[in-house]
Image 1: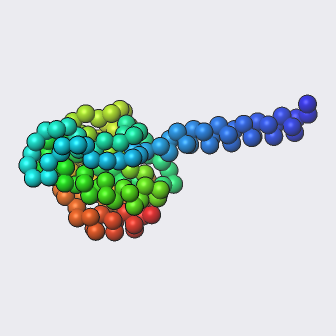
Image 2: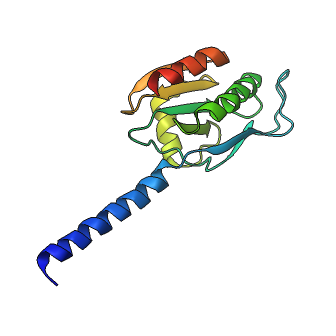
Image 3: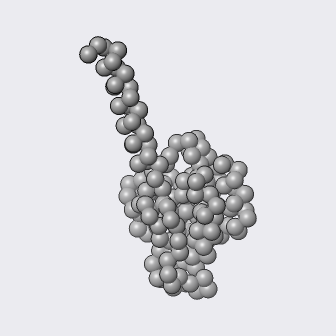
Length: 156
């Protein structure tokens, strides 16, 4: 086998491996839905208000805008904002990565890093990062659905 063929095979293998690892890193919280039994009128602890597949993925994906939701179980404002987020998710799921973090029970080191970087002690918190991973918007408290959609549309 000549050197040119070996290097071509090596390049192809590298591309396949990069695509594989990128696909792993690109996973985000998917299939977001509200947990059964959460209240939108009072503080009751029925657990974290959002359930999803891949919810423990808190890694950033370069080249894709990211919306990070910080909340906690048993918080009325978190529950109401979670409903807005789930509704918005259905519209942006293919355009932006969504990361969901329970500040009382971070899933892993990536979630802890995002908490240390952006969380200032108030929930709910919505952080929007542009495609370069730079902070575009950070808002503590509830954000109306239209305003939230407008902010994420700006970075998409």
